[in-house]
Amino acid sequence: WGAGLTSDLYVKAMQRGEAFLIAVGEINGKPTVLGFASHRIDGTSHGTAVYVRGTAARRGIGSALFRLAEADAIAMGATSIHVDASLAAVAFYRANGFGEVGRGNHRLRSGRDMACVFMRKTLT
Image (cartoon, rainbow, N blue to C red; front, top):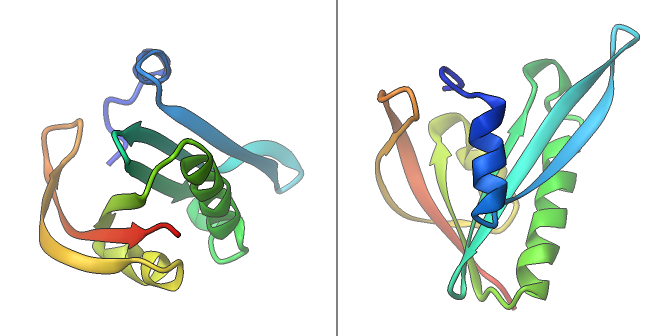
């Protein structure tokens, strides 16, 4: 999924108002990015995505990043959050309060389609 991603892509996303939260730690004694979340507001709907390095998975990093993104969404006035969840991430988003609203494909920047589950969470 990460094919074709460059630093310029992230700079442009930030210029358009997308925010990034980054978790940094160590793997084998070397500093590395363990995961990140990105999010953006579109009216009262909030789009988010959470990614965690495979070797850092299931340690609470993704949930911590998501909670920070959710808090930002609430502070910015969002009333819901939506995600295009990969099939592997559905359980993660369900555990964080999302419900399924449909299924389809998400077009990756590489041009490939990825099967996904469209999910939404209403914020209170």
